[in-house]
Every structure is written in structure tokens, then in C-alpha cells.
Amino acid sequence: MMHTAVGWHVELEFQEDDQETRSVALVRLPDGSEVRAHGHATRHHTDSNQPRVGEEIAGARALNELAMQLLTKAHSEIDQASGRTSHPIHV
Image (cartoon, rainbow, N blue to C red; front, side, top):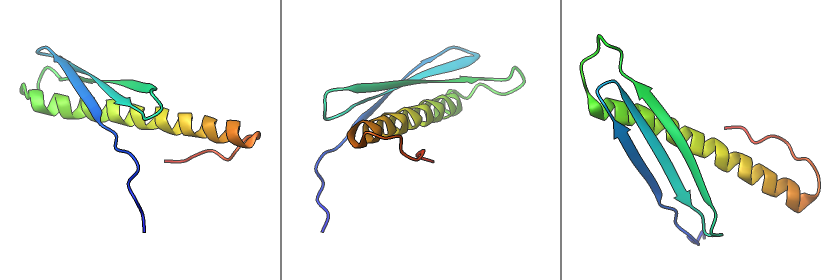
């Protein structure tokens, strides 16, 4: 039987204007460390102004970068604990 030991809350914030959306994703880990990543979306001048779509794209890109940073962090911790270089972690 599996038990939930911790929960993570990811925060996303957005800054927008008529042409672009920028996002920041942040997760605070139980060890007190924070991992932060950024995303960006640019609206093509012929597209209609749909702020939610820009948020979804910029947010997804920030979350993707956050995931990659977490994988890199975990990979480094595996190497430190084992004292050797481990196999790459693939998405």
C-alpha cells in the first residue's frame, strides 16, 4: 500500500501585454529549496488577441522547464548519493 508523504504546490504567475505573455513557475520542495522556471509566448500579429491561449502556452513552457530542472536536480542527487555517474533520466 502506498502512502502520501508530501504534497507540492506549484505557483504560476503571468505578465502580459498585447503581443506577448511571460510566465514564472515556482515549486517549493520539502527540503526548503525552490525551483523556478520561465516561459514565454508571442502572439503573431495576424492572430486574434486571446490572453488565455498565451497563458496556456507560456505556462506550459515554464512547467516543462520546471520539470527538466527537477529531473536534473534528481539526477545530481542520485549521483551524489551513489558516488558514481548514473544513467541519464529521460522524460
